[in-house]
Length: 213
Length: 271
Image 1 (cartoon, each protein chain N blue to C red):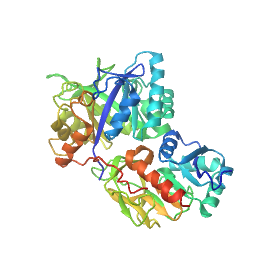
Image 2 (tube, rainbow over the protein chains, first blue to last red):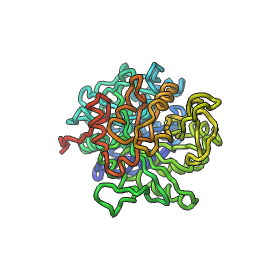
Image 3 (cartoon, chains in turn purple, green):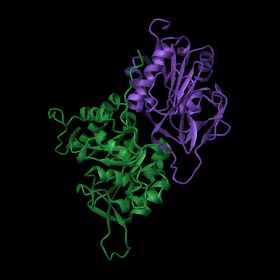
Image 4 (cartoon, helix red, strand yellow):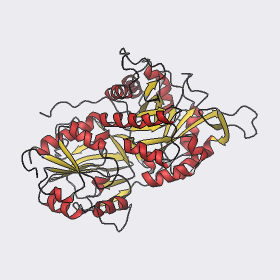
């Protein structure tokens, strides 16, 4: 298994759709990437990227059925850097209003909420929105604050979640759009679809998280 | 704040972009979907739409290859449409790398396709495209617009607002509205039709057809009582012929107080 040398990041394939865009974007950011559906490979990985798309229940069920839950919790708790994307961010929390009773990974305390219908607010949020950095997230270090990222989602991580660094975005309500908590990082938006900003963020994941780990 | 989107649309036939395109100065690769996608990505267009106008089955297969090649190389949302008629088409295009799939005539023929696609893949990837045309004066149904299919040749008799509402109800995540009276005229988007649909729905509306000058974009994206109230504007020829560029449109919109994603570059603090 690759240990210190190549710093290979694993992109988890648990049957949740097309991973090519994410894989390509990680490569473009200069990361060494391997797509895997083998939970046993998590041990010793330089980093883990968890994509996610679709209904929270289906995503969690697919993740659990693939056998990733326990190995992921073990390695991340032991300090392996993790990057969650979209529902891959929501999965890190205790649960989601989208699927009451379905256990998230519980790496961070909090429940994912649904955007409430209000006049003029279309759900899902679909499109480009701004990020306001909070605290010192390695993903955003030195980044010009005026950038926009591409979002597609109906559920969000509320500010009440136990998070201290990242970025906040506003869509009817303010919510966490980037989080960094120790070795755990995530974005609600799709960096792989967010052009230069997405690339800048993934490059910082490589430089400030993977290469310094 | 969520930005209004500017979306170039490219017509593809047998795997090549067509429409007498005169992209920039370089004629050599004017028809290569990948080259054009990369140029629009460099212009920081907010999304790209590829519309397959191929009639043959072989040509359709080429569209899968186009979607795959483009999705591999650009970091922006990609919609593919044209001739998508069943769930298998849907799945194949999503697997090829498209983020959203546009359906039009097939959805009129089989509305349950919207429901099935939305249930299987999520409403965010189901774009319902509607071609519509103003009803002639004195029409028994009164004022409004009728939905057309078959590339705009066949009047379905369906009312635009009723069909758009049904599309939303069935699970479409977005409506792309092409008003044929305005299409290709460059006389501006049809504000009344766009506004009527935008007000009737809770999902995003992309205005299409008629873009000619900077003011047209500002009007159709304006949330005012006389504006189009659209969430995004799609255009083809004004961009392809180089009359307007995406950054130029966005700079104008920004000056007019419309929220757009401005051009952004990493400031190089990294390394």
